[in-house]
Length: 389
Image (tube, rainbow, N blue to C red; front, side, top):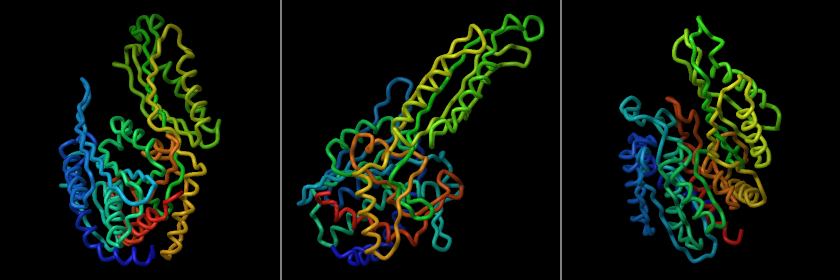
């Protein structure tokens, strides 16, 4: 494939991309707004069907007490080659209903704004457009492209993770389409994330009359907070943050209950495990007598380490970018994505392949429109070079 041909085709599709981006951004589709997420799922399904992909759509059936999530949509496209490629984009955002009415899609110069414009409606569309560009150029030499559009990435992919893992076992490479870093870097490694909730139970008592009969859950939480924060710096790149402290009822009552919510992140599997054990040890060691602690851990995402397969993908992407006329570098980041899941499953993985953007999850979230054609061309070129990787 001549990469210049891919660029020319992508350039001709630019206006179509912006129109599709506007349509998607102007839909409220927070993770817990399934009706909105399903509007995006409808748009993805329609693009799959118009391109001749085989489509599977799965409805979320929540267990008792769970909130319903949007539908999972999977497209599969068979080519004449042998390499099996898994692409992943997500259809949910972090924004509540009503956000679009407050700040709908807008363009100012080379930047587009709106809820989810870069995280990750721009990347979601890049997956579709890259394959469409390849096929318009007459390239069908991939083996199979499986594209998962999942509805729950912003809450850790609790439902779609099993599907992602299953498809990863049948893939030779995984390409995740989160937005590129603000400086244009793609992502070759991500920290793993462990969320821990500590529920501390003490004993209530009158704080003025007989405080000695009480066992303060807040005091125990304070000791644990200091110990947990002291874990920062123990291992390279590992961070521990007590982000939520909630307890007590009244100032004249010794607090019977307190909850800590803790975020643990590590760039490597070994230190991820060590940090998790250290947090558990702090949970089990009490300073205030007679308190009890319930520890609830959720291994949200395993670390995405830059191993041989991912390094090859990053080098190949850098080569394609050079042919397209721009410099590309890969980087590590502290945030997690579905690439953590595919990498943890042993599949060569690369992330950050969407357009350049920034201020994710905030009111000024933006996407660099001048990066759209280069990033579509980059992904298309990368897909054309994966045979035999």
